[in-house]
Image (tube, rainbow, N blue to C red; front, side):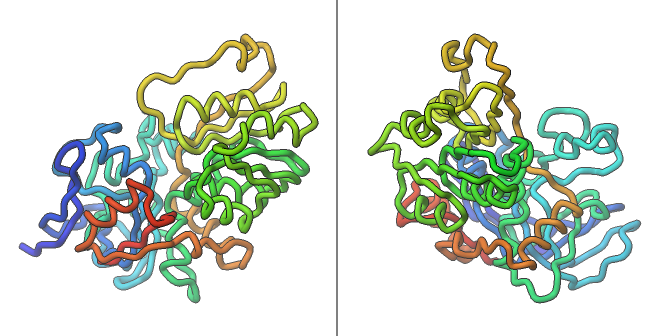
Length: 351
């Protein structure tokens, strides 16, 4: 039996490099050889025991690779072809998918998130892809692995927050937290036509990157109360859209307090514990405001569109890759990323 290296969750506080069998492709499936992947903030939630997965699961949901094996029924692809697979792998055939909610594939919440959640993920040398015909997205010639590494999750998620927030031409938008997903939400707001983008964080490197990606104003919440400053910048009106990209009670409340009547709170964070609505900030439910949530849109057409944006030159997310590791260094990579040391934004993991 062929074996491979894989990053395995063994219990809260521990993800280790272990050995597992190389997966085999069944009907409708494919196996890809991973050439590049990364660590997501959700993986850190798993590491800390804040999001439950079964011990023994391979972690990771942001795969870039080449096709190693095609199962029966998978046509139109070639062995060795370079592909991206979204973090969310919809079947494309269930009622929820056909209803346009592919992220919720199967009809239950977050049903489309399988890698590193319900099946083995991609922080490994090989990955089995379910519903391959709906999820294998060929990488255009001329694009490198690093250029498309953000497409499977954070680019799709951040853009999804901007899209679901309904940003219109000329809108004023505030994005709370400028981690990788918040930065992509900032870039998405610019591409959607926002005329004023306000980015909130406390890490200088993140605020600098936010300006590079389109933020007009940046707020260091350690130095200035972000809600007061946003209200000052908007003449007391508040923003049309507030995007929450961290997953904490405080940032959620700040989004509400910075939002104008009739505005939209677009939530991207992964929350743990209890989340409550303060009645004053919620205007007792009478402010005509909308609250929307987003799970990373997936599927090969979504990936094609995101890669087309990269190929067009309209957005370059490579500068977000601040550190590079081999798969054999995965525990070191998690330690750096989870503790946000050395100005880390995203890490590239190469088997």
